Image (cartoon, rainbow, N blue to C red; front, side, top):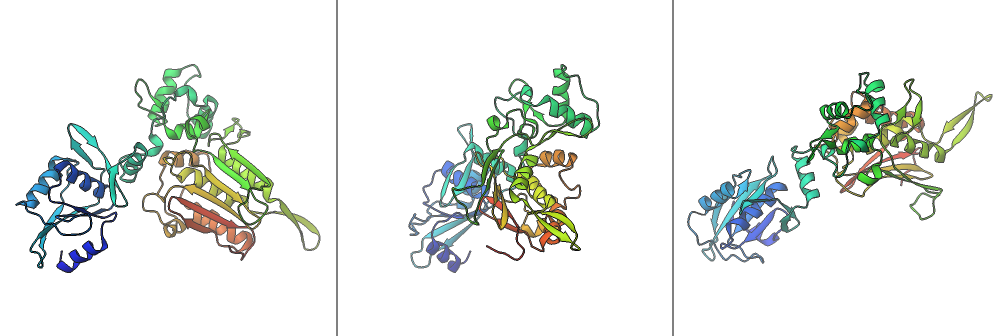
Length: 410
């Protein structure tokens, strides 16, 4: 850390990666700042600096040992920050720059025999909410949101018919008798659909999303908010509005005939009845009906939206907006596991919800090689009308835009 770099930090002020602290900070408060920065992307704590950037100076001896002791004794898992002390030539006062890297795990402050998890929000370090902590653990690979137990749910909240269809017809395996509850609990626990509860195994988030009898009750964020608009902009007026709810898994007969659609099927049907068809003559003789949008790219985009969405964003449905010139499908949540649009177009296989992905692939909704985006969406739209699908990354969303009219742009 040079004097020029220190001057720049002081001039720019506090932000999500820089915190100013007086030398008299208490050990637990320093541990809090270390944890919050590490749980974000890392950063620096400038000891001996007032909130306004004025240098008050560090007076204690062996600052590096004091900081390292706090990072070891007050933080779980322990941190190893880097400490460098710089002397301001004008005042002769010292500033200790404590640098902490982003942690590979989620860190917590250990104080009075209690763990407290902190995150950095702007210039503030504050305790994480349960939802924020779950998302942070998921990002660090220590927690899979889809395996979160659903409080208040039990085995009876899963649709027995869909479970039997999945295991018997789709997976081709023997299943316990309908009345053999213990046998079903054992099978579903072995396949991760039931997870450890307080007194007995309970359904996880993925199980309710796939096979739940009342998905809206336990997962209000698991639906699709579908609207067909009469114009190219969002409006209160609508051709049709529908809040689609229900399990992802369809119910089929043993011969593969559809009895009850899954959530994706219901959304595809919504698009189909609102895009209409146009008739064209081939060779001036044969009449051919052409749909307003091709089924395969629409289905693939919808499947990706419900499988890869962030289910920790409560009360946020997938949005389906159908306009005269385009279809927009918005999936809640940031792109998972380092995925970028470029990697998606290249066929990356990374997934946020592995169990959901595997089961929907078993049903045939997904490409086995993870190439649905380049093969089905991109290639399908080019073959249909020569348009290029758009993938728009928002702060907490990913939108897929399929053009109904080639060459037309927003």
